[in-house]
Image (cartoon, rainbow, N blue to C red; front, top):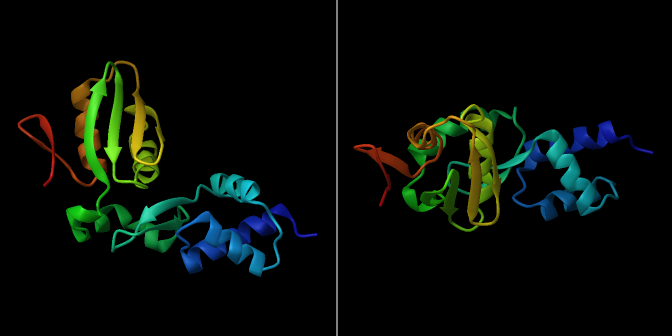
Length: 168
């Protein structure tokens, strides 16, 4: 029987070499390697390995491991390489103390992951649907601090004269 640690290592290897864009494709690769696991098990493994969908230089999202070389400079590369049409951000607003970000379909989880990975001192947590990110700021954080942080993290957002706007 193949151990869980071996399965996790194979998943990382497959993600790093094939950059699959869906769990279904990754599951198929695993089945081809002789692993008979379910989608549910794969989802748990992906979460445990902290694998997430990240944009490439063309704006296509695929699974990447946190320490993969493609992922090391993704933050800078996506900002300068992608035209706005490839970026997922659409709009942002506050509702009471909460934040809501609208995205293009399929981009919300990547943006939520960016917020969770790069703004944890400002935002307690972000969760995503297909095209919406909902987040809760930490206590005592001003709206301006949140906006200043999000502008640095999310491609497609900019701030002029203290006002948040979308790039056209």
